[in-house]
Length: 127
Image 1: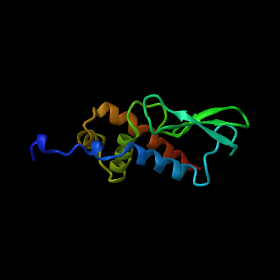
Image 2: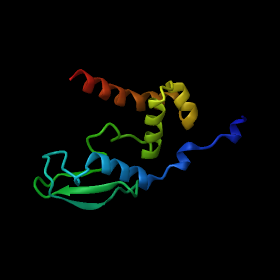
Image 3: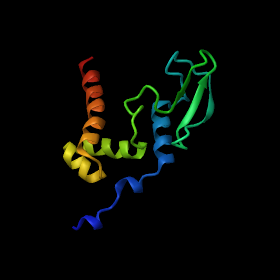
Image 4: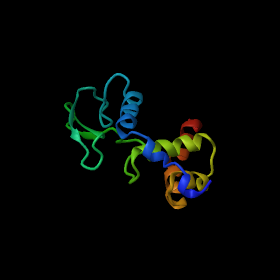
């Protein structure tokens, strides 16, 4: 298949659904402050660059956080939908080079994206 016939997988993903999925699985009983663990939090707008990334403020400790704070997905420049696809490809046991080809990314970017989740899984398994 010619490269021009390939489907842009990340274009098929919906950012709003990806963030809703993260919220649902991270906080099934409602958002909790990653700083103090408190459940008394209020919504505090959305991220300036990712409109579906909800911000929060904790009433107990006054801490501010968002949907990805304290996760392996925080602090990276790739959109959440690209992360979701990358994690899916990792689950299919694709190499970093294969994932880069599927997502149209540089291998070095995929290397950086896969190191932290793999490290996180190893740490959890060792506990």
